[in-house]
Every structure is written in C-alpha cells, then in structure tokens.
Image (cartoon, rainbow, N blue to C red; front, side, top):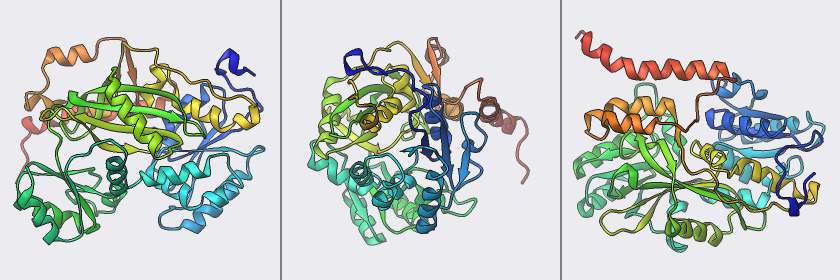
Length: 420
C-alpha cells in the first residue's frame, strides 16, 4: 500500500472494496474497464437490459428497477445488491438518472455503500439544466442568454427578442427518451430553431413530453471553439485531478456531442471551471462543456455532467485517471492515505468515439466542415478510442457494425432511391 509521500498507488490490493457502477451504457462500461485494469472487482446496474454493460467482459450487470418510476423498489434492490458483496462496495454513477437517485436516497444508501452523501446532493444540483445555469451565473461562469419556459406564450416572447438560431433543450435529457418511436425528437439532446415560427413549432413537438423546457441563444463559433473540462474533487472539495480537451468534431455538427478531441491548455477556462465547482462545494467527478464565444471572446458554459461521461475517458490517457482518483479518495479512510493531486502528462493524442464520428462524417463533409486532409490528420497516431477495445470483443463488433452502417447507408440511399 503506497503512502502519500510515494504518490498514489497504481494497483488495488485484493482486499480493497469492489465497485458498483450505476449505468450500463458504454460510459459505464468504460469506467468499469478502467477500474478493472487497476485490479478492482466491478459490476454495474441498469434498468435497460439492452445496454452494453449486459454484454461486457469487465463485470456482471444487474437488472434493476427504474429509479425514476419505482424509487422505493430501486432502493430495495440496491440494498440487496450491497449485501451480495463481502465488503461495503464503492458506488459511482455514469448516468444522470442515477445521480438523481443517489441524492434522493443518499442517507439510506450511505448505510450500505461507500460514497460522499453530501457530494451526491451537490451533484444532483447539476442534474438539471435550470440549476446548472442558475449556479453558473452566481459563481462566475457565464452562460448564453437562456430562459426556462412553461407555455407557448413564453416561447413566443423569447422569440421576439432572441438572436437566431436558437436551441430548445429538455430540463432532463431523459425527458426526450419517453417519446414514442418515430417522434422527431426521440433521443435528441437539443432542437435547433432558425426563426420564431420554427421555435414555436419545435416547442409544440417537445411539449408532448414536458412543457417545461429551456430556450437559449447559441454561442457563436466553430466546433473547435468548444472545450471540455474533466475533473475530480475530493471529499473536502479540493481538486485532485483535472485536464482539458478541445473538440475537433461533434455529432451532429456544431451542436452535438464530441466525437474527436485532443488535449489543450487554456488557463483562463481552467480557472473559470475550477472556480465554479469550488464555489458550489462540488465533490466527485465532473465534466463541464464550455465554448469561447467568437463575438465577445467570453468563455460560456454549454452544460455540466456531474458524473463519469463519454469524454471523461480521455482523462486516463492524459495521465489523470479521474475514475481511479475518485475511488482512492472514497476509500481513503480505509487505506489511511490521502490522494496526491495529479496534473496532465499526456498531450499528443486524439481521442475518438468511432460510432459518433462515423455518424457525423457525411454531414460534416456536405457542410464543408471536413476535408479529406483534416480527416486523415485527426486519425494520425497516437490515438485513443472510446468504443474500440479488442478484449471486449462483443462491444467492439457492435461498434464496427454501426460504423459501417453509418458510412454506407448514405451511399446505398443514393444508389437505390426510395420507392414512393
């Protein structure tokens, strides 16, 4: 067992507590992978048996009740799961629904799992867009012009004053997962409106799930003006690891999630994000997506994810393994060792989410945002992949299948026109 003077340990002894990762989407699988590589025993839970975690080689997946729909049954399930382990497990989240559930049941869960109950409550403050922007304005991190609306009249009033295009967002990402099959907003994170009339139309569509929505002016600038701050704060609110990456491409283009990123240094953006999280007393893992507005040069928040995220995988390649750091902090009472803060060491690489990047390829090409030269440069080694892992061959085969579908489907549609 390493002492603080020796630095942080790299590998877990057999007697250290296991980990329960909440969320079996690919994000949860990657967190499991990173922890298994450190010698830990890991499992995951999810209410959707179709998620990737039910096919991964990195640990067992448990099918749990949906904590939104059956909160008491979910809590009962989690308590039962903790008793299946010889030692009190560490609890980590990779999905927003479980961030909220942890906060709601923090007192009871703390009897059976290792996590910071007060940290779970703080994390839940960032689980909705409304609280994110209220807190960012109060703690020095600017946000674009935003309004939270509950009816069409408020949407119309915003549209009369807004600079278009504008974005329409759900307060919870999972709100738009409840749409029926075929709904144009099913599974989307945002809706883009080009005019007041278009904004009104999009609101009518979105209000079929919830009338409480967010409308927002865009932050001007290309995808490469977007940065992602990845961090971990210990139980006292001190930063024990952080790094920053620049987005090269997103899916969909301009307003989507990062598909290719690379490490970058931006002291001003780092200080703003750090100041914001310290200001709210944050504890645990957090990702903040920001963008420098080309109109005024101001760094503005796009969103915060108070959990392990897709882009969080980059941190381990940059020498700041935030999942491992968070684990070490949570068990510091057991080991008797505080975590030694770390700084980035890996700089020259690109991190790629293959499924996302293949989905954005044709759109970026048609929009004139991606030349063949830029594509080849972005895939020049050294590379790290979120969704390509030869050991986890089932999931890698799934990635390859989706990549080919994304790349070939547009070509097939051109050759074989649809029949009307």
